[in-house]
Length: 480
Image (cartoon, rainbow, N blue to C red; front, side):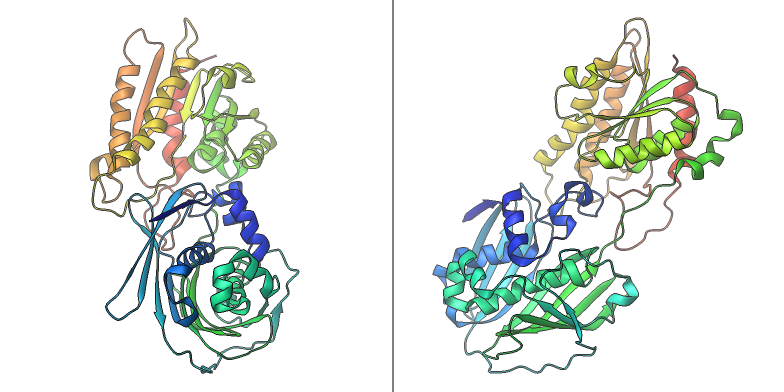
């Protein structure tokens, strides 16, 4: 078994080789606003790494067909393992896994390659995405299903042979460059900016096509899942790939749009109050910060990597006449130095720090996942509360729990367990004389980047309408 951790250095090198600079792979701040929640490795990068690693163990020079299924995101910095077996028919089955599930799998068949394959595109192939273009196209869904064209190889085929020498000897640089052009097609051209790559099914041929060009044309679209399948062809490779247009990052309402929730009568209700909103740069925390600002609470909006997002929230609050600051605070680090230079002393705390919530696929309970949730939802929460206590005053805290404590949906048991434990911790923290008073509320699924999905679920509530009564309770007991 072979293991690897894909680093940001790997990401940069692969982007420079393939020309796929989609921000989901390259930009930490942008990636956290996608369904992935953090930067992920290019699917084709993982595939070519796997093929290069096993090239000496199989007759790669006789490879005739390749099916690749990019089942789940491979996160930058995570450790993955590579394993393979030969089937009874001589085909090779390859799996890339982490500790709990299969992330990608490939099936290789060997034999005589066809000289040519049928190529009957359903759309015009006039459009050319040139090699020098480094900005992903932001296409509408209606456009994705009709676009066809050509993608120029980003680098010369010989460069691919240098990056993957064993594959280069077996397949030739033109074929490897064809696969590299496929990730450039998906990540930069169509679907483009808001894309996810799912599958490749390719036949290796002896056909010579337009040099250093990948031709593509759509042949199947699925409106419900925003899936599109393309026919693709370059010298030595022909087949299909499947991708989807992932949901666009959610834009929470502005302070101006939230004014009706707070109302005129509450516009000066909490002048002099100071609130710390942990995780206030996006999602529920962003809305809470804006509501507090409208009620004239001085708001400290914290962030870890989303400094630009936090500054945008602060600017929005100030534009509505509120007082706000952005402050970096990482709940995984010690708090003494982080809170020493807070712009004001908070008397209320809204805790929206979160681990990336990814449903578990394996059937077995995962104690490591549970402990990862506990680090954020219990340990860090407790330490922060204790760090913010001011002698003689009470710190009033809102802690968001979840209805998953009751329903325990499959795959989210560890998440629900950690939140349930946090509810008990809140009771203990709030004991008489502690200087802390914590209110916990089990929130339903609310519209945020974390809950964004390919299929729009019905029944998601307004964050503002749900949270404003809670804010009023917290601030009514809080004070200057």
